[in-house]
Amino acid sequence: MASRQVKKILVVGGGTAGWMTAAYLARWLESTAIQVTLVESEQIGTIGVGEATVPGIHQFIRDLDISEPEFISATNATFKLGIEFADWAGEGTHFFHPFASYGVPIEDRPFHKTWWSAKSQGYTTGLDKFCLCTQLARAGKFAQPGFDQDSRLAWYNYAYHFDASLFAKFLRGYAVKRGVSRIEGKVKHIQLDAASGFIQSLAMESGQIIEGDLFVDCTGSTALLIDKTLGVGYEDWSKWLLCDSALAVQTSRVMAPDPFTRSSARTAGWQWHIPLQHRVGNGYVYSSQFISPEQAHRELLENLAGALTTDPRLIRFTTGMRRDFWHKNCVAIGLSGGFLEPLESTSISLIQTGIAKLTSFLVDFEINEQHIAQANHLNRLEYERIRDFIILHYKLNRRSQPFWQHVRAMEVPATLMEKIALFRASGDIKLGEQESFKEDSWISMFYGFGLEPRGLEPSIDPEKIRTIMNNMAGAIQKGAVYANAHVEFLKTVVKGKFREYG
Ligand SMILES: Cc1cc2nc3c(=O)[nH]c(=O)nc-3n(C[C@H](O)[C@H](O)[C@H](O)COP(=O)(O)OP(=O)(O)OC[C@H]3O[C@@H](n4cnc5c(N)ncnc54)[C@H](O)[C@@H]3O)c2cc1C
Image (tube, helix red, strand yellow):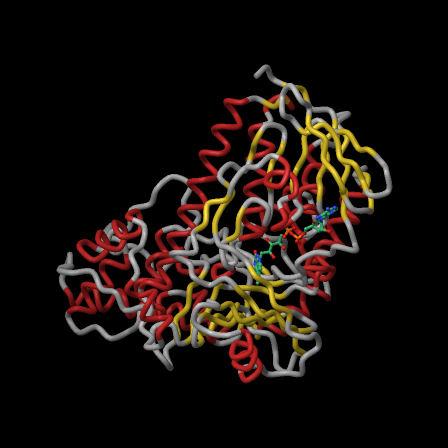
């Protein structure tokens, strides 16, 4: 295939994926003559969920040159320091996955290894006491991290919870202002070029024909272009990730918003709690093999604070990924490209990295087969690594219901088994290429689920180690005391007393 020059890009779909893509392209192509058009159908609508993020979102906001306070106000966002996992390691337990590391190395040894060796000798202060981010979250507080400080103890990261519909609206305003054309209506038919098999044009229900050189499929799980038209198949991962349904509902806010997402284990899945400034997003992600929709509905309602402001809505999904996210002149971004359940809030971040791959591999604005192959390879690695991290949560659970017993006993990918085995044997974490979750995330899971490495000896005098560690924990505790309550901190954003990220 000769390279093909791109002059016109069509983004099909106006959900989170569509408007993130259009906004990013508008900024990226500002000084070129390349046109961007987005087609969306209000009648079909969007999935309307997807409100918790990971810290990578800062890069997106920065790339678009959006002011952080403006973004927070426009989307009714709150701050997110990580995720609390309630009841996953057994009824009554909870642990925290922070956007941060634990302690600092002692005598060049990774802190977690020193801590586990001290624990095996009777040290009782928990690993989470060495993480300011976790301590702030537990106290319902928020402060901006000390990125520029020498002290690594004061370093952590944060993300946001935001209103998905306000986010899309905000990005739509941004994109349209920068020249993106928007066409409302349903795509009825897609015309292919007989010789190349490339997509040539979209035929709208209105009769309008829209031509393009590059098509971004953001049509959600319908995958109208990449699947229904080009026939690029889907790799189904539901043998490892059994949840296939979610009941989503919004409730009124009855308490100050937590600076974290909560994931509470339930009979056959888990429930999310995402606090925004004006309301709370909730949902029960479950496996329909182990619980009926009626039982799940009941269990969800029994575990909500606040009044319902929407009716519970059932969403079905198949966990997995598109075999190739880029095929010929079509790139699948968002749910058309794959779906991993929202346990670690990774979908919006996958949209972002999908856009990054599209723009990096569209070298000189040309569609080139070699570049497409590289992009697909990296995309696959990224998806598989996240998949393994999510499976880990199920594999290590300590609950007793049939669903949980099943997922604990199931065979998991060899890549994941290797990571677990290595950690058990040595306390080491081996990261591969395109790994979204770094060492600290794996440590927080192993710690939270009570998995211990074997035979870690103290590297220096145990008494000296204890003294150093106690000093660290004390410094973190002091830091947490000085921070504001999250809800108070949010007011400083509104009052304009906010320092931009980083
Ligand atoms: C239960 C659940 C919870 C989630 N929680 C999170 C979370 O906390 N964090 C996170 O990062 N992600 C989360 N996600 C994922 C997140 O919701 C999606 O990644 C994100 O919303 C992107 O969706 P989308 O834009 O691909 O699809 P959609 O929102 O479905 O948008 C599809 C668009 O295509 C248009 N369209 C479709 N067919 C046609 C047609 N024929 N003609 C014209 N237009 C058409 C539709 O009108 C719509 O505009 C969650 C997903 C689920 C299912």
